Image (cartoon, rainbow, N blue to C red; front, side, top):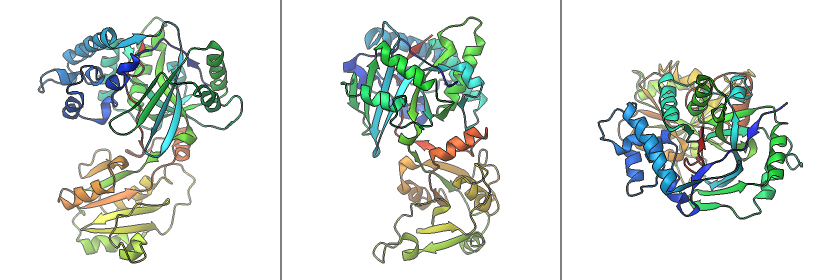
Length: 420
């Protein structure tokens, strides 16, 4: 017995307005950035997902007025820029960018199966962020942003492989095709053929579990909203896009620290040498003598790039962990356990104000910038977590350390909306 997927009557943009409506997820920018992104575009879905941008800047983003405005803006968009399919469909959503192509199935998945552990998480959620999305979801009577899910692809190329079924369907022309301002191409196909829908429902029915890649708060919120309602209905299933795990890439999620915990630079490097082999100059960047001082991007597990006082160092762990524990073998855990906690005194990275996190999409130049400005004392560039590691943590019902994964490219909100 596998997972359940369900077709739905999507509310989606008119094809000629798809690029105007589509917006980045609400949680990757602040209100000021969202205002700038939506400026001059009355159709931007940010006016639904971050409705505070249409209210005075002093407005509490969690006030009832914001959720009311979100509903008003959604209804306006539906009337002016969107349409609703008249029959339940499945949808294929392809993203091309950052050197990769990933093709997923947009469908509704079961809130009950999330509660039963068939849709697996790897992050904690925060109550205040959940409450925000509960209020937003109830006000809009809709799932406005899809959850980014993955499935373990074990039947590649076989007739019942969902990716193979989708590949055949995408030989048809897409309903939408546009390139966003970040260079990512978005394509969407409408699967209105019942035979193909049934093939995909059957194929996913043989997949034992789905994994949350991104969108833990929206996922938890959707499940809670389903439980809040006495009657059964559309809210018992929520919007997701499901990708095969072997098409996804996780970028590095890097760390910057404000100070060296009272140590001088020499003392810090001396302490570091107990667990890490430290290389600088040609040995670190492996440039053959032509590029000394270039940025150090780790090329394998248990290797870290460190930027300290105008210099990049390559750190290599002397004794990699022998434990099979999926958490302790993560690079971010190794850095935490051998360096951040014992040397720099960062014992709780979730709460400590001395640490900040920089997504790999910003590049290693952002790490240099934060240190060179004097804001931070040292930066660490990590080797990215793999999908296999993520799934191993979720399968073990464990929780990853904070800021362990950064997925790109991002799904756009507003291309598909699921009304209750």
